[in-house]
Image 1: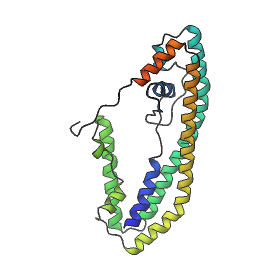
Image 2: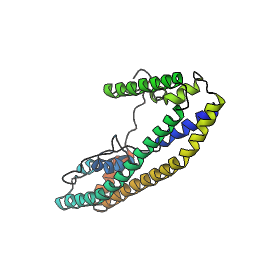
Image 3: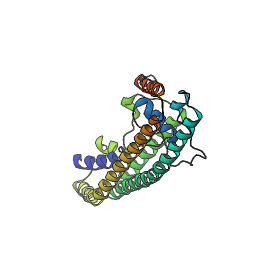
Image 4: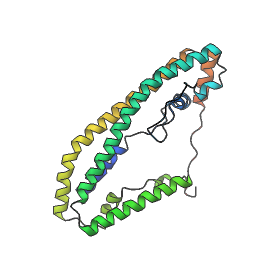
Length: 234
């Protein structure tokens, strides 16, 4: 039981290395304010018809030449970032599909009753997550992350696996683990490239600012407020 739990949790952990995507024109602005890369949901995005000046620079009263230069910097870097995001999205989706295949292969060795029970729990978890997104509720960190339904079932010992089932799961995992690790390395490498490109873009944007504008920008990101603490009631 403990071994199979490790197998399933290792598979699910691969997804945690991924990052989601925000509007590329806004990422450098958030980077300038909080000093990190902020990415929102979704990989696919239609390219903007015209490069936009990051919102954090709009309050710096850029001159017309500065605005033109800023747009050119954003346009140049966003073209490179878009290409890396395409690779990132492809690798991430391949990882998801591989993990689904792994879980499905493990489920093939369950009894009909075990398989039905696990799938019912997964279906309930999926619908519960959608409902949470629909209401835009903010749950407590201790309870917000839904457990993988297969792992949750096995961890709760509601499904007792036979030694043969555990051995089969271990054998299946060995067939998938190499590919999953390779995908995970690719995702980490692409994430690093995205951070580096966004950071370089910020550096190029800072070069065109006056001392006063740069001081104002730095003050803004030093004084950024943290996210409010989320309570159980919220």
